[in-house]
Length: 255
Image 1 (cartoon, rainbow, N blue to C red):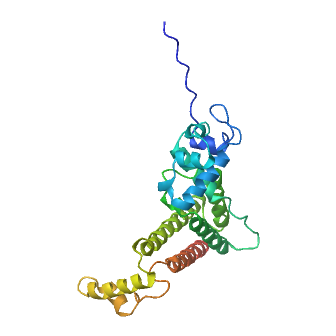
Image 2 (cartoon, helix red, strand yellow):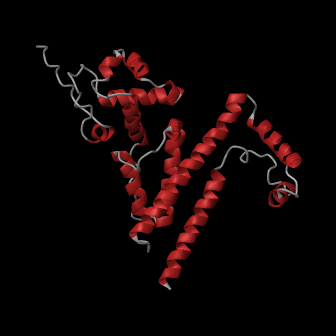
Image 3 (cartoon, rainbow, N blue to C red):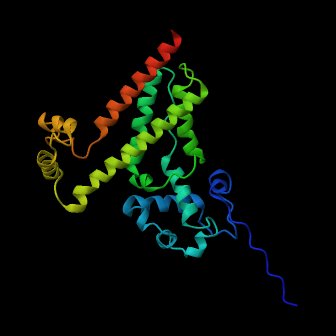
């Protein structure tokens, strides 16, 4: 008879790694190694070279271990990315009791933008599930805190939080993409802005783009230090108008 093969231990899921299995390697631990150390090193690499340069081997080499040593703590790169996504987010600042809900939302948005600026590779990770990690849920909870009890029902609160979260992420990614243009092409941002404004004048006509042509004629796309790749003014404007709308919606409901 052939000897029975020893059953392979089930690999921890990303949720288990984030919520309880951080210090429970699937096999014998290696001295001086832990999931926290692996995650911190992976974040360093992602900050330097992006997700494209992140691999289990790259992390292992920087830690002076073999890749197989890392698999004792995390099954593979997919789960590692889940862990470093949550870890890099960190914990949001505690809400103060003195700020009103609009100021709270505004502070949350700019704090989230700060995280994306510090770790731009976060914007390259596909969000294919609702927030599940402890830090993700902490950011979710923080925004819920600001808009709960202002006159919206629970379902409306969730809708508002999802909209703000997705708008901030998408606009931050667009800003990051635009900022990479001058870096990749080697053309200064001022020159790219001038080329864009010139192209708009030549390409946009009243016959096909009547509304856009009015903007071009008014000089809206003339280059300055912000218009080409800084969409933060657009975010600020849109956020304030959104909050105005929520304010009006709540007031109308009260009347």
